[in-house]
Image 1: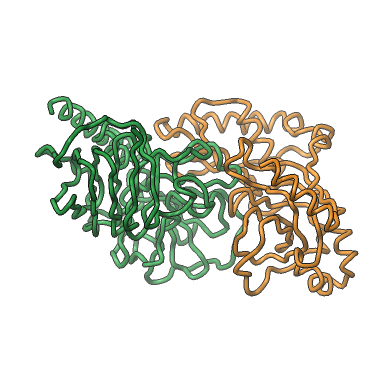
Image 2: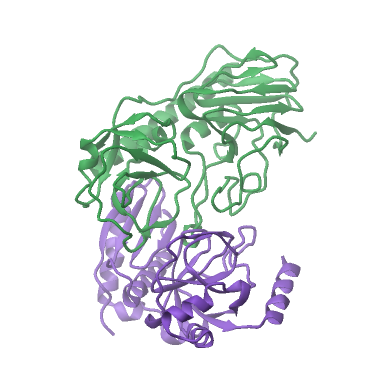
Length: 242
Length: 314
């Protein structure tokens, strides 16, 4: 395994530092971000307020009354320690295998209005697009744009699709979509420009739950195709439990 | 007895806010909270609340509210021309009111003010805060700005028994000098220092998520880069070359180029920017930002001590 990439530390706000591992979307860079986030969380500094893992960078928010230089020194020490024992700091594959989240998706029809046109654009049949999208091994590279919106890396490059020229004014909650080289899920009804392939009956994000998000940054994800009956059943179970 | 606040007219955008949410940004949850947390904290102090109690944030035109029981209130921020059953109510001081109607009216000399009420606005906390997350649609009152007909529960207050409005002759005015440039720490971006060499105007499309600036466009790389974390104060440069300064409702990540960030000491001033207002920027270094942040905290602490001394003498 190659050593983790070097990172720069720059000011994000007076109460936040940004650790930048690179400026492209790359699985190794993203793994380094999540490993650093885990290491920082494990070091449990009293000043830590928020961690924001993104594709290739990590935002570290701290108690505004603490001297930023003190936080910077702590981060620098962690970065240097990570550079010397890099491979140990990566989550082991085996551990990661155990925490794959399987997300049920009803592809096509009214829930996936862009499935047919997207398949045609890619030169695939709709069934082949479903098969290849559901065969992917994805990672939650980051959560952002809206509360609980997961940006999933690991999309088959042959399935990359440009965003819609004119975004939809309304995308249903749970819509599973492709935007550029990524796939994601709209947690809440909102406007959106990604190509909609299907929909999960799961409520991905609910601020009133103790654990508001089904997915965490760094989680591994697979999609499991379900039929309309399965969708209705899972949607009903969810309503009953909430 | 349970006290309630009845919204007769909501004002332009009135939201429930406290000190905001921490610990949920990794899930894409914005910080939210009062755009000037110090002003909200001082308003709370004037009415005897904890600094983190929920207040109402008022925008440009305040609401009209009916109290169904006596309350102590304080308005801090831009000047308000508030009236209680026709009688003028001053800002920056604790005002004891019997049951009746408070009409706050238009704000002057700034865009926002914070109204604290003894006991605080007692909506249910969501993810550890009572702040309204307008984009996420949760927190505060149903995740939205107030509407006519809304009823807000108030927390257990001072148990006042007053039949006429009563206020001391003193007041506080923690406002900032609006003529100084907004200080920022420039990033390494090529256009970062050019921000300070041009004059800007606050756009009418500004909101709690971001202050949009109009002026001679800066050279922009165009298109989105790889999304990175952003924060309140981040100065973004979209493709059109007109910067956006993110505020408390900022999203957690963004793909626009970054010109740097507005220093913590000057963030409260951004809350007071009104559409059409001219704005200038001046670059500072990290040591200066830290020194000014400490000075700003010390100033707020002094005002707080003064409030306590005066309240004790009432």
